[in-house]
Image 1: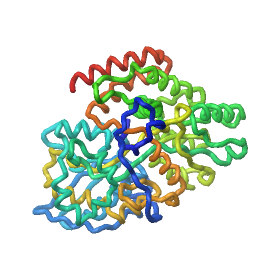
Image 2: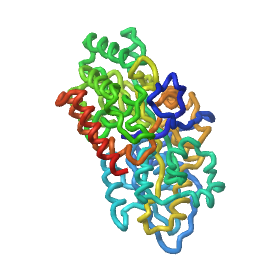
Image 3: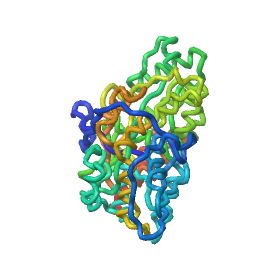
Image 4: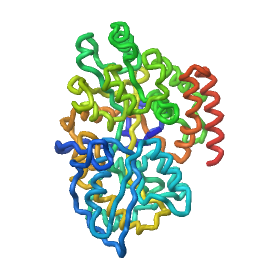
Length: 447
């Protein structure tokens, strides 16, 4: 699950149950070029060259933990290529998201960690901040903020990386759900991009009936991770939080919690039966191969679809905001803010690490990341910044609000197996929601 910050929504759109804790993201500025690089599958030719001279008293190796994707690589590559000079060496080993998650847990668990800079997400900041696993960064913002132009980082993204007034990560970029679809197929069939789940099922049925696609819809519903994000997105689209923050009671006994499970399961006839084994790269592959005609996944995966060397259908992909689960309200979406954090158990001077982090989110690095990423720096992305930029901006405007509390991630992780059982038909949505209520109540007892 990777929910983070969201823009505020009017009461009529979000519904009475969904808490209004949103913050604004802006999208104005200049068109920039794409970037990808060191640690990525495409080499590091497009890493930004930025000023990154830091002073150390002895040869120092900085180990960076970040997962490998076209949206993250530009920032990691900038760190590696620009900050490796003199007595400083920055190293980053390519790794997938699951591996990154496992190594984050491991490196933060001991008195001494393996990594000195780690990629973190808005939804996990409250938990890690509460545990004392991350270095508070306010003093370094005060010291270096003007030099690195950190006041130009989007306020909403900075808030997403802040807990109880303390910044725990320098925001790098945001990702949100975007729909990709085969415009050639849609035009041939006389179809329009769906704006609701009801329309999504109608379009999927039409594509299935055409005989061209056995499973026209592809979603990342990996049972060990992505499926938690999917359920949270569906629940948020219906206007319901995991937890009522005022009473600290779970909301899985709300009838709409059952509806969210039912709506997700209703999509399974249009997806490969192995859907609970698919992460985002697997969904990309379905689109590359022409096995599916629609996909909904994080925006950081969209640029890859437009690369001709990846797929013969590169010129045929078009993009739209994700649909709503009901007839109105927030979209089926999760907005994730990625950033750089410094573990408290690193042996390297946090001031040195902060300068390395700050250099990687510079104007030049941010511009180089577009259109693969949606950078945190204001004024970089416009509707003309890439083929999916307009859809991404719409998705930011209409994503469900976040739940910035330390219990959000544990509840998501511990209820995930139940969501998988419902999707696989091993338990009913009603029984699943009841079990999730019990699990969440147990988690909240710790707080």
